[in-house]
Length: 626
Image (cartoon, rainbow, N blue to C red):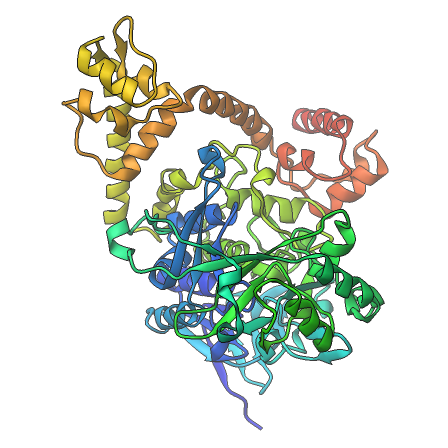
C-alpha cells in the first residue's frame, strides 16, 4: 500500500492557543508550515473560562502582541466585556482582562490562519514523531501519511490520552467532547521523553434563561477601553459591552459538597493526575478553606449569541445529581438548568526540565514544544510559549541564536525560565509574584521592552517599529520638558491645586515635582501648562509612571544589573559536574539534569545552594586557566 508523503519546513502538532501562535510565527517568517489538529472545531478553542488576560496573564498577552503574536489582536476583535484589574493598586500589577465571545474568538483565529501565506491547516491525528539519529525528520499521521520536516513543534494541550471525568462517569475524550490523541505518548516515550500525568477542570455551563439575575450583583465593563494590541486605539475597538454577574456559595452549598466528597473522583482516587494549586475545584476550596462560609461565583456569558453561561469559581468533578443540588443552592441559581456538566480532565504532558530555554528538547534535535503540554496551565501561558517555540524553530533553521528572554525583560522570560529550571509537580500558572522586577515588567510598557526584539526577529513591520521609535522619543522629550518647566505661585495655580486636593505652593517648582505628588497627574496640570504638546494617551501614561516611580525604577534597574552579571557568567557546555569537587550530591544530580547555561540559571535551580554556586564559580575559573 502506498502512503502519502509530503514535505514542509516545520510541522506544528495542535492548533490550540500555543499551536496557533507557533504556526503563525513560522509562516510569517517565511517557512512552509503545516499545523495539525484533531478537529477543525478545536482551533483556538476556549474549553474552560471565556476570557483572555487577568492578573499577570494580561501582561503575557501584551508581550505576545509586542513581539508580533496574534492573541491580542484576536481578543480585541472578539471581546464582549473589557476590564482593567487591580486599578486601586500600583501600575506594576494593573492587568487587563476581556470576556471573549468563544465562538467568534475561535472563528476569527481560524480565519487568520487559513488566510496566512505559507500556512496549511490540516485535520489529522499525529501518532509518531520521526527521527534519524535523534534528529527530527518528520511526523506520521493515524492514516499512515508521512510529513517530512526539519523541525516539529508539539502543542498538544490537554489532548494526549485525555480522559474527562465526573462522578463515576469517565470518557476517553479531549475537552468539550472532542477526540483525544491516544497514540503520540508512546512515540514520545520511545524517544526517551519523560511524561507526567496532570489534570485540570472546568465548571458547568448553565442556561441563561434559568438564572435569577435580580438576586446577583451586576458586574460592568470599564467605560474606558484599553486594547490588548498596541496596534489598536480605543476608538478602533469600542463597542457595547455585556454584563457579568457575581453571587456566592453558602453553608448549604458547602454541606452538600462535604456530604458527597466520597463520590468525588478527586478524593476517591479515581483521578491520578495532579491538579493546579491556584485554580482549585470547589471541592478543594471547601476542604482546604473550611473556615470560609462562602466563595465568590462569577456568572459569565460564553458569547453574544448564546444562552450558555460559565459558572466561574465552581469547577467540579462531582456526580451529575450532586452538581444540580450544589449549583441550585447558590443564590440566583435556585432553578438553574445545566447545559454542560462540570468535569475534570486528565492528560499526558512532559517534565519541562527536559527542555532548553529555547523550548527545544535537549535530547531530540529540532523538536520544540509549548503550552499545557509543557506542564503549564492557561490560554495565555500556552500562547506565549507557542510563540517562542515557533520563533526558535525558525531561528534554528536560519542557523541563528535562539531568542531567550531574560527574567528582567519579560513575564514570558519568567514563565519559561521557571518551567525549564524549577521542578513542576503541578500545572504551572503565571502570577505577578513570580516576577522579581514587576515595576519594570508592566503591561503598559511591553511594546517598549519587546517590540525592538520582535522587529529584529522579523515579526514586527518597519512601519510599526518606526511608530514605536517615535513614541519612545516623545516620552523622553516630554519627561525632559516637564523637568525644566517651572510653575510659580500664581493665583490660578493655587486655585487649581486646591481644587485637586493638593497643597498650595510657597515657592516655584517644576512640573515634574507637581506630577510626583500622589494626588496629581500629568493631565490634571494642563490648565497651567499652556505649552504642553498634543500626545497620545499611551505616551501620557508613560510620562506619568516614569516620573512618579522614578526612584523605584532606578533601584530595580540596579538590581537587574547585578542579575545580569550572574547571567553573563556562562557555564561551559562540556562541564562534567561529577568532576566538580565539593559539590553536594543533590546539586550534581540537578545540574547534570538541567544543564544550566549560566550561573544565574544555576542559582535558581531547586536543590542548588549558594555554597554550590561558589564551588562552581571557582571550578569554572580553574577551567579557564587550565
